[in-house]
Image (cartoon, rainbow, N blue to C red; front, top):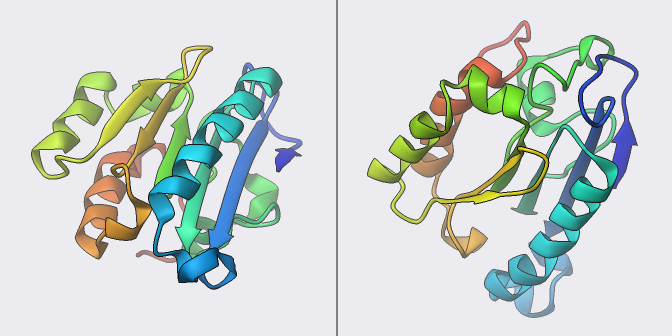
Length: 166
């Protein structure tokens, strides 16, 4: 769902896109997440492109992409009132949409490419408008905790700061 946020001004004027699907609601308990991800990705990227969204993310499994607070904001106690997605990411997940500003904040596309050293299934793709769509592999069901930690470590410079650490 696209959500307008009142802070900042980037290509999308602060627009974000988020998508979450819970395994319990999927046929077969979400065992075939590749099929879901394959259908969801073009929709999410198409919406982001048409809207000119600054950032977004997709979670498939247990976490929810909410318009009021991302899981990252909840975990770190980031105040949504201080959100500026033109400078920092709204959140991250199996799939994460980064604007050119976010890519620059982490050190550039080359730094994202280095994630392949620890995450061989990582996929990076041009999402239009200078944005990058990063996924932790083809199958969201195979993402491990250590994969998420490695992603978080690289994305840290682009993530908003809260009063708690993760």
